[in-house]
Image (tube, rainbow, N blue to C red; front, top):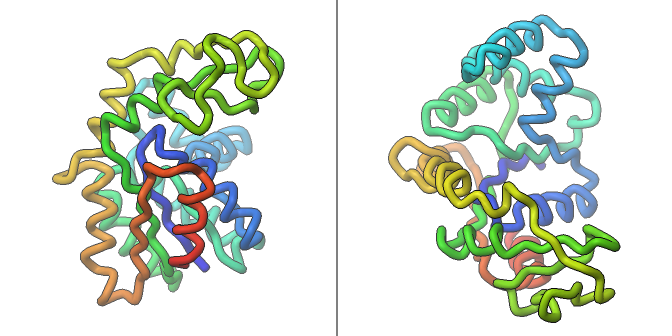
Amino acid sequence: MNILFFGPNGSGKGTQGAILKDKYNTPHIESGAIFRDNIKGGTELGTQAKEYIDKGELVPDDITIPMILDRLQKDDCKGGWLLDGFPRNKVQAVKLDESLTEAGMKLDIVVEIVLDREIAKNRIMGRRLCANDNNHPNNIFIDAIKPDGDKCRVCGGELTTRDDDQDEEAINKRHGIYYDTDTGTLASAYYFKDIAGKKGINYVPVDGAPAIQEITAELLSKL
């Protein structure tokens, strides 16, 4: 089962991706990790990508997509894969679709976690880190995991925030790209939605507003 995963920062996409990875024993492949692995491994594509990254420029699609296809054709992906973090715009979606077709690879499922933009931002800015264990879930905007005042709801430890979680300008910039339905990330998701019937793709929208367990239950019921 080959899956493409969409969802804004703050939607719990990473959590749901990890759940699918474990349930279906499918590698969860993030585009950022592909770049890092190629650069670290000194591959030809990685070397080319590094030249752009070092100059602060975006890596062209004709470098990025071959790296992604190479990763999707590794032995651990023969039983399926879950691709996360790419495409980020409609042009990339079209190119990825064409490249998968040329490589004889079928995209089976596209998952979109649907979440209101303001809720997504609040979830990011509401995250709190426990001094005793960062895995203790605390978020001032989510009732199910709301901390006990300024103490961890699990162990009573001191809570802090991550600086990037409080950078509203940066969050708005990332969300501006994601929620752009003309050329941005949602436009790329909708491209696959539009061709789903013709290509035999199961397009799966999932409500990202409920608790994690409810999102997982809806997602699994639709796969």
